[in-house]
Every structure is written in structure tokens, then in C-alpha cells.
Image (cartoon, rainbow, N blue to C red; front, top):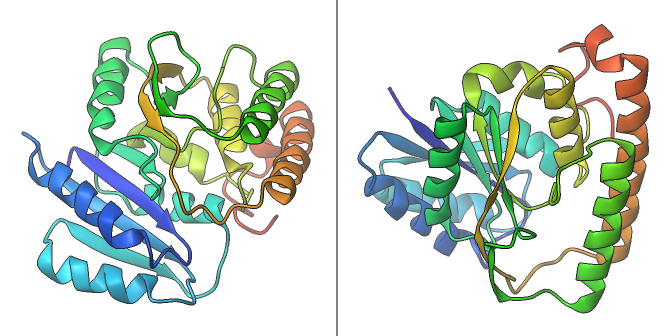
Length: 252
């Protein structure tokens, strides 16, 4: 049985995807337990899918799952987790801001503490920041996290780090309820998990700001804010209990 599934969501990532996939495949091949790498191509319009297919022909642990149209990062991660064969599913951004080997720290901590979710965090005293983001990104991230903690997820310092580990046996039912397509999906997943009694821990990681991101900070921040407010309302009104698995992916 596969023990760890590494999930890489990708949209128009032809410049960075091969390096990320080969890094993940090399990591998976060197483990002492069975692992796989799942690339979820989210309707890319460039050569992303073709590059992944070529790498998959060379790397037996790699497979690709494709969305015919772009559905958003949240839906890509959801597809990857639901398709995972592993007892654990690790979601990692293709910018490799957190080195893939840090997965072992998350896996060890989650196993030891009996957690359902382990979040890599940049904001722990033991985290190692090798290259920082711009001050604008840091400011938006810090302010956003203060709001997230105040409204929905008290105690979690870094909900938006793109490096998270999920226990698939307990988290598939959570991902069945995910509706947020964009960057606010992290908050929704964690909020649903907590409301369902899942255990969430944060683990310090090494982090280096990745170059080449096409993320537009202003629109992304507004999207996360919108999704935060919507998720907060849904948690407080019992939406996810009433609509479990019935309309996942239909909302933005």
C-alpha cells in the first residue's frame, strides 16, 4: 500500500514544473516506504501537461490527473487528495518554497501526535527562512492571518503556507465538502476539518521565497478575504453539515 502521495497542483507552470516533478519523484524514490507523485494539471493552456507526461514516462512513481478547464487551485488540491492512494497526502506548491524533504518532519510530527493535518509554518521560532518575501507580501500575509485567527481559526499562525500533510482516511470526507476554488481554499479546508473534530498541528519548516510566481498580490488577497468571510458564515450557519458532499466545486 502507498504510504505517501505527493500532490503538485499546476496551472500554466511550464517553466517550473519539470524541476518540481523531478525533485518530488527523486524524493519519493528514495523513501523507505511506497510513495507516489500526483500532478494535477488544472486546465493549463501551455506545455505543462505535455512536460509532465514526458517526465511520467521516465519516472514510474509519477502520474498526472487533468482538469479539462481551469477550476482553481482549491479544486486542483481537492482532486489530488481524492485521487491519492497514500495513507498520507502532501500538498506542495511547485515553486518549491519548502524543500520537499521537509515532508518527513510533517510526517513524523503528525504520526507522533496523532494529527489529521500537519501544516508547514514559516512563523515558528524554529522555522528557517533562507530568502524572504517582499515586505508587501509579508505585510499582507501577517494582516490576513490576524483576521483569519480572529474570525475562524484561532491558534494557527500560518494557514496559507503551501505545504500541508493530510491523513487521507480522515480528510477525504473533509475535502468532499470543499467549495472554494481559489487561494482561500486552505482556510476552508482547515475550518471544515476543525469543525469535524480533526486535529491540526503546525510544524516549523525551512522556507525560501520562490522566484517566477505569476500571483497578483492585490487580487489574490481580495479573493482570500472574500472566501474567508463566506467560509466563516458557512461554518457558523452549519452549511457544511447540511451540504456535505452535495455541491463541492460549484462555488467560487
